[in-house]
Length: 360
Image (tube, rainbow, N blue to C red; front, top):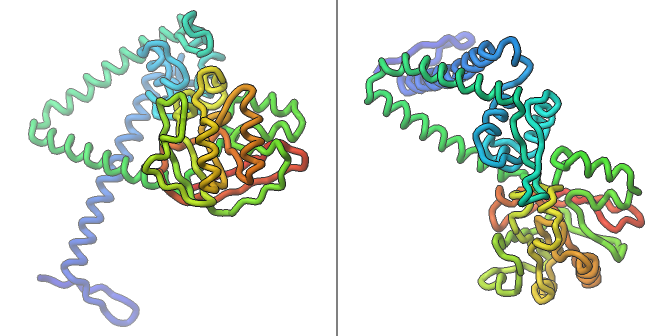
């Protein structure tokens, strides 16, 4: 056991051995984290140097997007966003730049005329092949270093990195659940829909994104906080009363049905707005929810029923003092039960109300 004297004002403090070792451990952790940062920065520098000249105007994400389009079958925004772990909005912006630079082009599959896919142009294929060559060179470069590291140490490094990566995944998931937005933000809404909205009267624009339908023009009053129940109905075309078996529904709560359509296809896609193939809630289920006195019925679709039944069912729910909330997002990032805050603004004469939903 040893002590360290540290000067403090006019006297001296004695620092214990335990404190000294804690400082040393923290210092080593800082060295590890700084090393990660330095390695990332150096890899990024090497990447920029590799693409200096003809391709230097393109960033890492754009080059990786080209690489992914060259590798996967029938690449669309959904597949690319999953492969790059990026939002659909961010991928759409990247693809737009790549199209403008003649690296990729859009096409439609004859068997599915609704979905837009991407393909490399001759110039894009050239970049793709150049990236393949560089990637092989990077692997060979790194192999030169790692071949001098013995197998045991390599296994320790791999084990450590996997554990740390899994730990960070858990932290990310935990943080994402806090203050998670369940409403669509403007940047995640396709530009063509926003442009259409700009040409419409103010009350019509309220139907874009996440909103409450109020075709009866009721003066809506909602709590600022509400209990939420999410019910997973993915894979079901007809959502009926049996889905409520063993599910406790609270009075004045907000029940949301997760069909998976928004997270799978993205808001604004043709699949998302195709009323012929979408799931729907039966009238019996709606009546059962109203019997439970739920305040809000939500869904990650453009409605709980579709076509000619859409407005009718919304008016029916509204006449009972409850309301339908449409186009809810991020249901894959929240638990089944939680509290949420609500913010909304009702315009006079509007048949829809923009609503913000955030987990608490």
